Length: 495
Image 1 (spheres, helix red, strand yellow):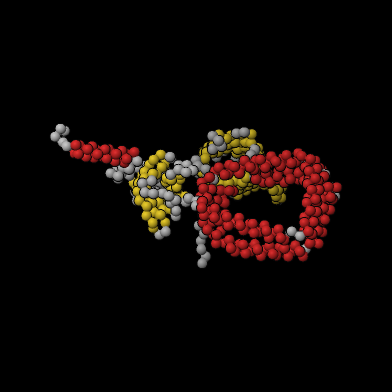
Image 2 (spheres, one colour; image 1 turned 60 degrees about the horizontal axis):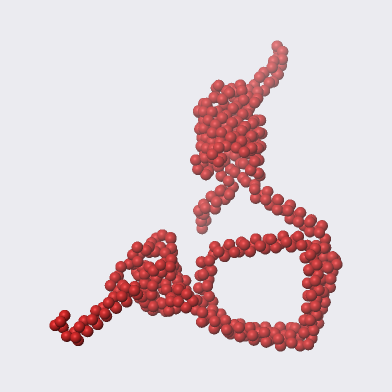
């Protein structure tokens, strides 16, 4: 260094200081101009409100990229943004312009979204929340304020006469009497008013919950205020002209109907006096608690009726079985009417492969004397079932008509009603073909799916000739399920 001149030493020192300063500037400011890592996306805004190139992008409040380029395209600002490569954006990702404080710098806030598919590099973020232009809104609100002032002045001219003031004074006095009467009514009906206030409190809580669940739609609504303000600016001149015309018409109407207004005020005063004395239907409703109780009881009766109708359920069942001993099939069609969870009725039609035997005795007179002839008629026919069912927890007992004869039965439900063990006994008079004992059937039904179930068990256990097993399948629908199925069937055009 001894051979270097003082000027050269100063120059080298200045170059080193400038290089260090430039490096620190890029490092602290986050200006990684040498790096181009990350994915690029496009965002369109009608107004970027102070965003510049190299402005930071934040996701969940954390720096995640920069605005690389801003370009005006078809009247909108097109932003090319670069996001860190390890951050994934979905199709419902959204972008909005925010500030770090009331007077802080603006930045671009992005929500990544969660709905597939993923956005690829070069795609556009379509969900955008536009920033509200405060200056335009203030100017439009100022114009509206001037319009309201003009309207107030017009109304003041309309009702500023002595007669109008006198009528208004009388109206105020009558309203004072009405308020006094209503106060007395409220004291008498304090219990009813408290119930109404409780209902209002519940409604307020529901509205608050609704607002909390719809914050994002409300934010979008705020973004649309700018369009509404522009439309309002175009419509304000027509609105002012219409209001001015309405004010003139109102003034002429008031002038023409002053006697009628005075008579109406007097009539209103008379009506409130009658109500206070308990005269008329409205007066009796306010003063007589018995009428209120009658109306309340009638409303409770209607409510109970509607609740009973809503609880009523209807089920339709189609079932087919194969019997091993007759080696034949058996079909069932049932309609279940359930007015209550613990009580229901079963109506059904059964196609039975076993014939019914009808015995008939006739007397015939011959040359040798009178002879009794016994005839047996074997006939297969459609049979009917009509049972009443009472349920106790997981056990249900049935009684009524079973396949054209008196019968009883029971069901034991398990696995949240997906399965049941069932037992039925009927035909106590042994009317079936070659039957010497009642018909006893025991089996199990189990739902594999919501509407599909399988069944299996032993049939006609007490009769040796027909004793055997059975297996079957069935479908069970509720009336609401049938409405859905019929509603989704394709319609055939008749054209």
